[in-house]
Length: 235
Image (cartoon, rainbow, N blue to C red):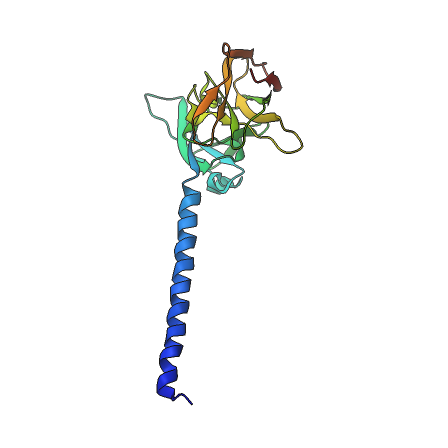
């Protein structure tokens, strides 16, 4: 029979192993949290708004925008040199589709929300920004493209507008597909009304290299209001 003296080290070894295991789990959790944070993108909200002593805020459907709670809305800033242009930058999850609106807050605390429907933004990788006008609806534009892809390839659209990344592939709008819709890819983004837009699709390979579609830039003029659906085929 083992003596108590021989059993005690074994017990302590069990405690030590449990401590090491817990430390490993905590380290893994911290690493996962850090990785998730690295997937955020910087979004600059820019809006032209005339004010009479009010300040401007942006609120929306994500916790980063206050989850529609005006008390948690994000303030925008302006200067004597940039007024009436207001802006602020926020980290939002890449790939998320976010709804948002602007709010004017008077010196007495009275809040005035935009009366237009909620604005929508699809967050792509990298930095991007909006170009909005107070209480003027953007055109919700859906890009639909039929394109066959190889394993690990994804489809994007970019163009000559800040909302589409200004031809920077890192700021392009990602399109999505599914087993029931492939090879049709789609994505929705807000574009300014009554505006000529040039755009083009590209495929991103698993090694992050890209392949542009052939031909000239595509072109479309957005309507003065409402929605726009664009149906294209990869070329």
